[in-house]
Image 1: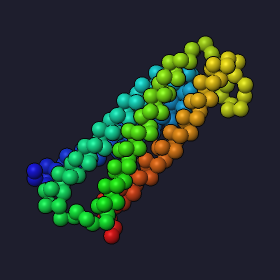
Image 2: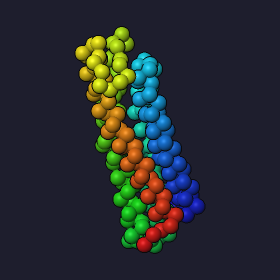
Image 3: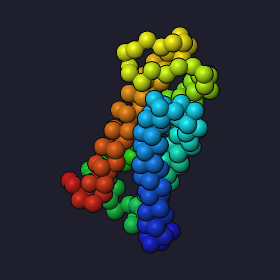
Image 4: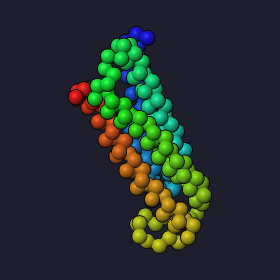
Length: 172
């Protein structure tokens, strides 16, 4: 495989992974805001959260594969370099974190939203009592998931920034 083709494939895969990760962050932010003002609209976004997360995973796996193709095109000249090892570890972390951590939580959001009947009252303030016990329990569980997904997105963004710094500056 030529270097140019491997580089193009790598660039496209990174763009898909990063673009999907940013879209995922935006969709999640919109979802949690809509949950307080219009739960039916938030429910409509829930399946999209899972789909965009899958695109990020596909981009991540494509990035790993095309990265190895890039290395092969230069006869693994950079293999063993500290920057490359760190970059690979971070990218494996990014992909595994998305597949193992976020995917299950987003699936749970979709399930919880389907259990939540539209007639149940939602109180926007976190500490207030809810008029329906089931609605309150669902909302409480959704809030727990929200905080873990916020941490997930911050971690993913930080790891992406580190990957780009390592790729551009090749720090030793």
